[in-house]
Image 1 (cartoon, rainbow, N blue to C red):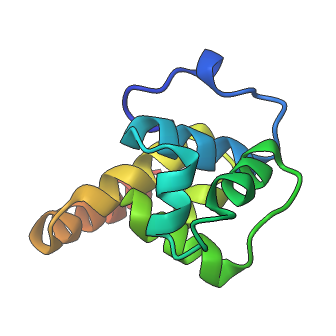
Image 2: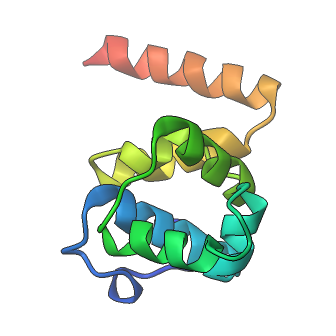
Length: 115
């Protein structure tokens, strides 16, 4: 879950994409309508479309999901990370600059060789 979001704020029974989208939106402080508009959804249907995605009634195509990720400033892969710990790592990786990413990858490589 993004920083500031607890499991109790997002229904754990929702489909994975719906849970991650809602968590990221709540963490960002955006309304459903503002997120939809920022992602390029028509302003008259933005709130309803995001609501359907967050309830798991519909799942956006990859291009729409990429626009949502960009608007929320999260990596696209975050939405589909099956494990919460992996989702956190994806979020953290997305927040790093290029130099820090290289350092993280080198450290992860070293750790994986120790196993």
